Image (cartoon, rainbow, N blue to C red):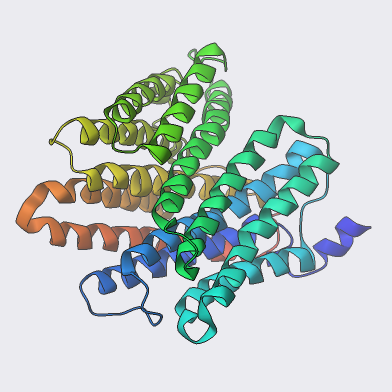
Length: 393
């Protein structure tokens, strides 16, 4: 009866992926042009915040936070067998996300404490919701995901501690959340990429299949976690950079074990492998940036954020949106263009620091490609999010 009642409400509030994936796409489309105009001095944040801190905060806790909420709250019913978060509870959570975005833009009149309360309420409530669902469903296997999202949320608290004036913790907060998100990509990606690849290859009669999850995957994840701990507390140490190279190599080999070369015919598949490849590349570049002068640090971090995060989030949002609304799991030409645009954005942004006098032009090209990718996603998938599930013929 409860399920029927929820399905009778607003379509967009029936499942978490609908409002949150749309919010992630919309905010990604707006936040980067705003940052670029602030970067060249055309716009100034109303609250007088440091533009770089705003950019880092909103891409992590606004854009990525919405994508995390949409994915996790949609996946939890499959993990626990419980009904999805929907209706007024989902609407309240979306409202908290929106309040957080508006609070930063209006922080001057409302003050830093009110800004912190409004912004922190979203992720903190999300953690409580996830904990409630996992514990009620006795789904202990996925508690590590709850721990990771809790640390991701802690990073946002540390940012606000500095804004309020308690302590200078914004930098470590951004670093903590950024690299915890890298672990989350490795954990979730390590489940869905080989699983979806295996299903696709088996359905198409392929002879090669991804290697099953085993001891090597545990070693690769352990190496990444050790690197992240070192990166958070001693980011400039040479050992940290060496750990980054080790983790990058292990995750690159992990990706090779998933037989990605056999799925190039389907963009929904190769974009998942591409997103994970960016994670391995980013770790290697971070290691090289710390050990040599060859790779600028900004190139390495954008391989992680624009490359790994930007690509993997689009890969997951497009596939999940199609699958959970009963649509065919194949990329349309428009969806393929989205994947090409985000790839251009990542390559150009990583290459920008190497271009000297042309660096600023490359940053703008990357920003335009990013905005076009997420803008096209928002337009093409708006009917998917707002219309009822397609009924099977």
